[in-house]
Image (cartoon, rainbow, N blue to C red):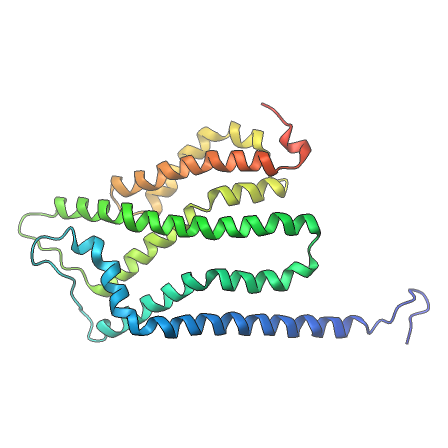
Amino acid sequence: MTDPEHGANPQEGTPRLIDHLVELRSRLLRAVAGLVLVTLVLLPFGNDLYAWLAAPLLAKLPAGGQLIAVEVASPFFAPVKLAFFAALMISTPWLLYQAWAFVAPGLYQREKRLAVPLLASAVVLFYAGCAFAYFLVLPAVFGFLTRIAPEGVAMMTDISAYLDFVLVIFLAFGASFELPVALVIATLLGWVTPAQLRESRGYAVVGIFIVAAVITPPDVVSQLMLAIPMCLLYEVGILAARWLAPADAATTRD
């Protein structure tokens, strides 16, 4: 029945809501199916993945040094856990695509043009942060820790503890490398302007070093190796925000 005052059927919203819920369910199922498929493919290679992940530590240990399994089930659960997290990282573009396909129809054309490069940049920066941590940070950290080990103390790390440590490092560096994307989003939302970002550069550097000291291991090597790239990424974020900011914000000067 049509509402005489508004000229529309008040029940039209119900089918639309059901359609959205059905679409959401479909996208979630596709996302989960993709993640499960990649996980199943990687499970047989769990031990190989763990050997690859342990290489930065094993390369710095003295001759005969090795990882140990303190818990009985660690040799099984650690590779399985690693395979799942590797599948999650590999599947990230597919998961983001499913989320994008669900929300894209409700966005304006300008929002779509901005969202696609931001999502792509976020994924690339996260991967770059993880690669930076694996190839540069982990060898430096383990080299430092093995050198300062007290005389007579042999480093024999549990495989589960090592996996948790490395995953935290990956997450910390991957998330920290998202700084330019975060600055661009804050600028587009009108929370800050490029001029304000430049004016706050000194405070940002202090905050970056504090964050690096909190989320990295208690050694100055890893703290510097996180803080310095973040300072550079802050400058990149300012340039990107200035380029993508609305005209009134972009023209603001010191």
